[in-house]
Length: 196
Image 1 (cartoon, rainbow, N blue to C red):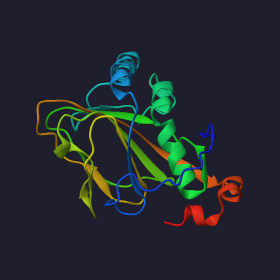
Image 2: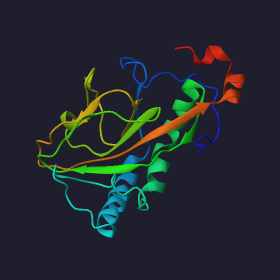
Image 3: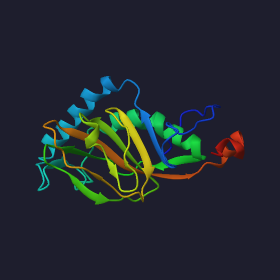
Image 4: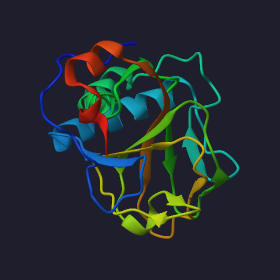
């Protein structure tokens, strides 16, 4: 799946200089317009597929991979510019969007330590009322993320969703992206463009 529309000539560096290598955070443009549509799409997904709270206290659709994702088009629209930046930063082409899923956490719910498959994992924070309830990484702790942020990280990084203490809901959409080398992009920019 090719995500790229056009290549830019800008030299793109990590979104925040103090982030570890291979962790990148981007803000979704016009997120406040996207947020209610994404939440409605997730609500439709829950109703259409009769999704109930699981034993850990959250809603998710990871376990029904064949169900059409009502939020997929909006999700792709939201993440596409960030994926394009990752492609240009590393000389890659996104060839797989993976199988996106949502998780909607209620008070008292959590998700234990785990890792993903693929090359880069991606999390879009649709609702994140408390930064202290953002993804926690075993090696790094928590990063400064907000609603409307997209975080990319290499899939082997162990992470979890800490217990939701507040009485407000946390909603994410996540996926595992696959990439391949984009030799044309490397030819256009030259190898020095990609040195960090």
